[in-house]
Image (cartoon, rainbow, N blue to C red; front, top):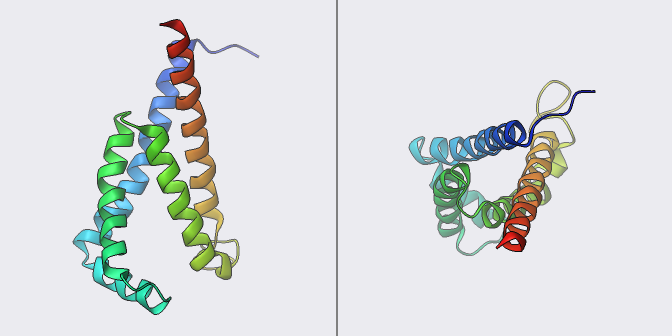
Length: 138
């Protein structure tokens, strides 16, 4: 098996981080422009959250702004952690009850959220390790 250079690996990982970030940003952008923030807030209220619309607005803005900042490499560990918490909440409140599959053999299932969670954990671990390595070099 041929070994990949460190530069190529960093480039590939940067593209991976950008891709995951864009997926999260798109989710927030569509919710914002389709007028879904209030609907999402109402849904959260129906689950017992007292400030559903405020939570929905905060999550939407963070998906857009945080996704952009993570894409450009600004605080990737912090935003990855935030998104993992958000996705776990989505699994507990919505997707876990719907089964595994998002489409095909089910609807609104967990598989996509799990893939994003694993991807975000990889991003956080990589950037945490990179920050630790560069701190040791200084």
